[in-house]
Image (tube, rainbow, N blue to C red):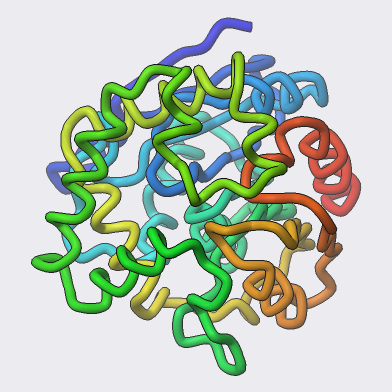
Length: 293
């Protein structure tokens, strides 16, 4: 199906890069991309959304791609941007989904954005100040290092992510697996090939082409107060987490599952951070549609 892209004027001097594909007038699935990420789609996810009769709607968070930076943004600050996207579409309701660093942003929308019928969180990060959670335990060392830098502030974090951005902004599809290296579980390595590797490379190219601002601000937001509480989420929620994930540890999914009221929970043995695209995404979207009904 054809896709359209637009730069929305946010009225505060910023622009927001938005991409829409799928049946005109259908229910939108607002997909909050991973960290780092972009409005560019993962085609396996996009196809699964279309097959269920929905529109796939993505936008590059502030500082990624062509979206203007919003310095000092919190996770909850995604909500006005999401509201502007829905207004642009003329949509009174939607489903939301978020992957990895997009997970908290999907939860923010479920908590604070009117018209959200249900939410899906895939390998989503838990709050940094979560009680009874060792937030970095089980993370690959690379992630531990950049989140430790984030705790010191932008001056410490930016050089680290600028160097990582230089490696990713032009990485070829056949170099993605090597570029992610120790961040990948065995289940993830098996799917970083072919079309999916192409889409991962495209995401990095598009999201980071203007610099590392979005990535810097995402990571600062993830280790700061989110601006809302997980317990505020009232729409039905589907949570998925793999127990081999080296980017967002299994314990994050367990913590969210214990605190999201009435969530449908998939805590999956043998799955990593990326492996869900190989077959699980359809099942998760079916669950999302079912709980929204």
